[in-house]
Image (cartoon, rainbow, N blue to C red; front, side, top):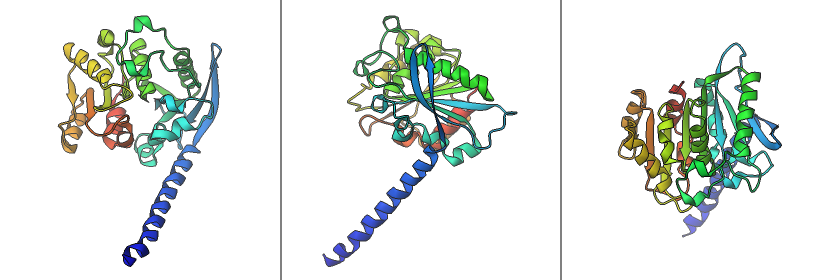
Amino acid sequence: MMKELKTLPLVVFYFLLASSAFSQEEGTLASKFEKHTHTYNQTTLPYRLYIPEAYDSTKLYPIMLCLHGAGERGNDNEIQIRKHDLGIAWANPMLQKNNPCFILAPQCPKNRKWNYVSFGGGTFLMDTVTVGKEILAVLNLLDTLLNNYSIDPNRQYVTGLSMGGYGTWDIITRYPQRFAAAVPMSGAGDTSRVELLKNIPIWFFHNTHDKIVPVSGSRDMLFAMKRLDFDIVETLQLDYEELSNRIDEGTKYLYTESPEGNHGPWEPWYSDERLHKWVFLQSK
């Protein structure tokens, strides 16, 4: 017993040291995102922008649009890149070394949404939901960045989680010609408009036991895509090598449902090299 008591402080010490190092790394990456605001049609969005460190205006770079969840709404212009690794994961130095890209992380105002639906309602009909003012502001911001920086219009990517997962399905369905790939996590879309998505590579994620956004939101999209003969791969039964091979073979549509956890498949996946590789293989 005495031996256990003596070793406990060391365990705690190393745990705190590791946590501190992780926080410092997060802080270093977060500091590389510029802070700005953008106003369009009386809607103002704070946003963070990551510019590749060796940015060369004679080259074209992809851009990743990151749509956060409901818990990151506000005006602090900070939480949307730190929480869930939504923005920071794409600024990882190793990823940027192999695939330098811009990262855009707007912040939705408090009590607003990327699209105006209930998070717990699953799939919805877009005919009953007007396009969000915040999404229109995001699109105008993207246009502004494309005009001001050397960004490849054929390599615009979008990802989002929870409320941002709904926003991701919404934005690619309303503007199907814009994005080269989409990664919705724990969201839902309009099954009646799935045919519009036939030219957009999509890898979407959900946890089976999600108690906040029902898994039916993603499953309904999966079944609608299957009915229209999308060549979609369900990844649950694939091991690491099999999934990597499918990506190398050029698979455009994937669905990953995990039986573990509640609301949030993003924690492991935003840092997964297979997801990174799949995204940057896509181009219009």
